[in-house]
Image (cartoon, rainbow over all chains, first blue to last red; front, side, top):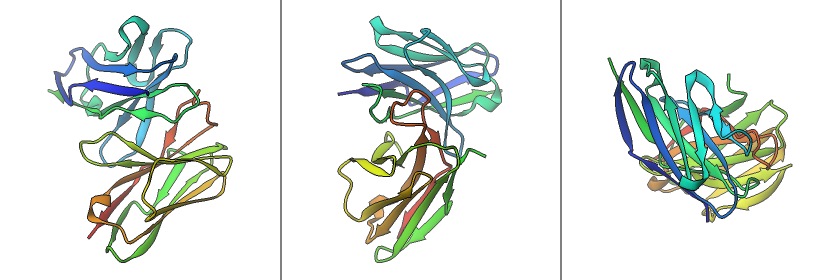
Length: 113
Length: 114
């Protein structure tokens, strides 16, 4: 069965520092992988997705993620954090790709001035 | 403007009430979903509709009753809820069930059962 593990329920970084949010997945077949962001009192917004093309995926707001099959990981990074990046981030997997998305528990990102 | 509109944004209901949540999308998508988001838990899939047909019911209690009259509208009818049903209910849509483009989410309905 597919599952997603997000390491760290809360990550705090300084403004301008590297952002690294970790996601590991479990699936028996090649997956589709997604990162979503949720701001307070809002729904989830798609940041980026991996659907079996390039393993390094670039998304909105300067975020990117790399699919590493050998490590079953899909970590989210951004070179320089902005205050506006403070939000909840969710990793999701669909495996096989035509099955509904399964989400991780989320990681709350705080950005310190 | 997310393209997926949920109403109401907030709802407080008693355990004996009957209410409905509404979701509407104008994206031309053919699949729609209900998810429940509770504090400190992963999003829980509740129901999936594909071309108006229910394709998944994730062991949801019968006090939650979905309805999908067409590909643009999705309802969640609520009756005799329990306090533990208080949560953010999120509606999402996708082009189809292939998930190639991911989901578009609404802003959710914050439900409080008293």
